[in-house]
Length: 444
Image (tube, rainbow, N blue to C red; front, side, top):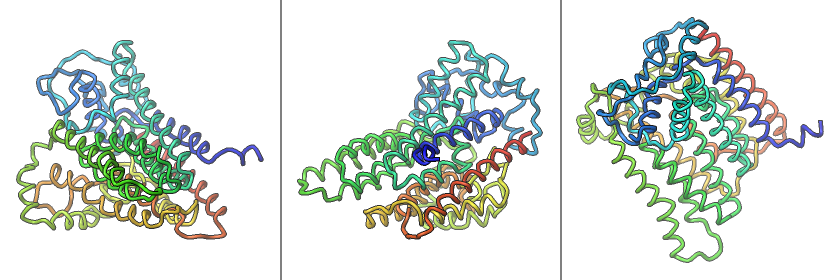
């Protein structure tokens, strides 16, 4: 028992995340996460040197054909009842890397190449070794999972005061499912936690070396996804923090390196990526509509939950906690209520940060981040005018939730903290097991 008590909490997270993550990797059928084929297209384009946008003249493998009977049309139309023979048919064939077509699913071509670098390397290695598609698919999922888990593990070690918040969020079924998938989310979510951990430690201990890591991670985040530069404003408390007598040139250099340079890199990403939209969406008309109706974005965000009400495929809260598959496999109802209780528990456990003013600022940033999260979908996925933001999912707000609880952790004190801590862990475990069971029942 004493040895168990000596094990650090982040080590428990490492074990649990690996256990549930690996389970998700192998239980989840091919193409059972949103836009998996589109992500594969992005990976292959990067592996062939097409880092930004979509070179329509570039020949690619017939990636949709990799998935055989498990194409998008099947995965979007539950119930599934997928058989072992169907999966075996898909994963047992050798991966076809020959360039066969210039037609591809280019729905995410505006994404940065950065989150896909490891996957692109894995693709090149898989092609050179002529492995089966299953070997390539599952190894790609495992690479993404290991990256994300190790980054979260590091974040928990760097900022122990946030370890319960990071644990609770990183173990959400929506997050673990993305960590175990071929997507950009594992890169983005885990780095956001690492970013918050260094900012928190610097504000608590005024370690100047942390500023270097804040700069590096900030640059990576600003180069990871269009419209994500808003997160850079988290560094304002770091820039303004009083560490003895700082020269004015120090403040100027911090503004340049922590804000201006990352934003500039983000602008480079926007120009280079040449954001794409479905052909039925008229982006220029949407921009003009927004200019004429500047409050329409806020109105559509407000009405999205009622337009896509509780229990439907696009429910925001459910997809924040975990609506798996192609948003087609819900968890048991009690899991969503229990997750809400877990968030409330975070207000009472952990160590309260010494930077209360900065905590309030982080809470404001997380709230205002709703606008830059929704704006791309308003412009690129919704034909205006429309009563709601089309395609808006709760999981898009996970980075905002991370920042929110960076500011809200342990704002209240209670003598029952140890009991709440134990309840939180058991609750998270029960939700995770229920999510695995839901995926298994939903697909098979």
